[in-house]
Image (tube, rainbow, N blue to C red; front, top):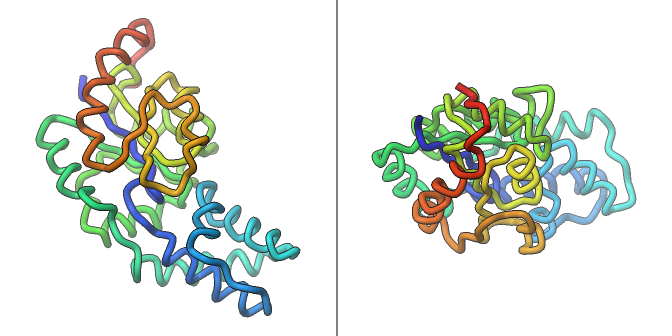
Length: 229
């Protein structure tokens, strides 16, 4: 069965905060509200754009309307790849893992269509066997069913898979699915979010070694787990 690496998107594969923050600030400033720094925006990322907008407005003592959320989605959808960049070593590392027999998949709370568009814009869309977005299934992270449904799309199996992400949602979904999780220490999440992860990677280039080392342990823990294939 193939080795499978499931990856979060924002804060793990790409630094998308510059574009997320720019669209957010255009929205809040139109309401006469103070803008957010990149650091402030990063702390609110991880549960999809609707939660991002709601958290931002709440931080300014306001509640967004459905029209505000729709306006943000439209603005960000038109400007998602202006300043967003891959983290260092992402493309070269993923291509090497593919060559080494790894099957790759993205499990993100970002909506599937913009997630696909962003991966294509970053020129790595061809590397992934599956993408599970925040609207791809009835549930999303931290529900482990989101991770498992993405893994099924990728044709992977629980006992030969590893998850990597920078948010508590990634760790919780992986733990619930019985899949070891590597915490992406370069991303937006603070280290207290790594609780439950089996390892912390300091850079993307660390992932192949850590993931390969985890597979024998994963196979042992899940020897009785049914394959998703």
